[in-house]
Amino acid sequence: MTEYLSESQLRFWKENGFIIIKDYFTDSQKLELVEWVEDLEFRPETAGKWMKYFEKPASDPNGRQLCRVENFLQFHDGFNELLRGEKLIGVLSELMAEPAVLFKEKINFKLPGGNGFLPHQDAPAFTSFGQRFHITLMVSIDASNPDNGCLQMSPGMHDKGMLPTAPDATVDPTYAETLKWEYVETEPGDIVLFDSYIPHKSDANLSNKPRRALYITYNRASEGSYRDEYYKEKRAVFPPDAERDPNKQYGDSGVFNVGNPVTTKM
Image (cartoon, rainbow, N blue to C red):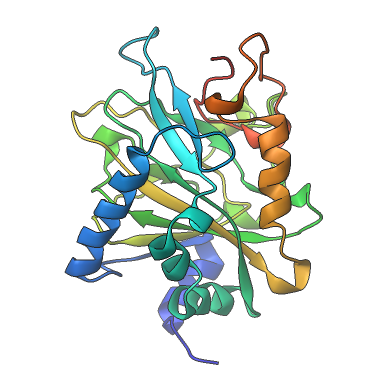
């Protein structure tokens, strides 16, 4: 098996539950990624295709702005080839110590005024499909920092299993206050890989620039390939606005809307 990571990176991963790889993409790839993200940002809401979710920005409680896009690989050849390509799959497989497969994909836009994400672990959303472990790859499209709501991690908490939770499946607020949080600042083209059990959160974007990032989740191939099943179930339980019943509330969406600011009613 090709080795993609250094011993120090693997050691940091084991101790902390995440790693940052700086400047992973070339300058031309960074420009291409921006083009691809903007293509999906401005595609129309279309029932049965890519899934666009919205939020009420912190600066305008009555407003509506794009929060994320999901389920787009089958509609975008560039992203599909990149995110299922040998190099990225190789990195994930090395961390998993066996072949990895893609589980789900999303772009979080966090436009100016975009809200933060409550402390949570990703594992509950994935173990419901009978799987035990996932790794998420974050690709930084824009620079991320405390001003625009960068990712925050609690290093070393990935090996504590499921933490105490609130009724909405986020980390219990009182418990979350006891954790040590670190800002994970990135530049365009950096990638961050993190364990599905590490608690993480982010603050609102208080800047005048977006903080766009890809979040691609992978699982061990031995635990099955469930991407299609995941999106079929999510579309039924927590559909995008384009497919919602305007008379229905979608607050009881289980594992499909944990800790994030996506609106539950049109």
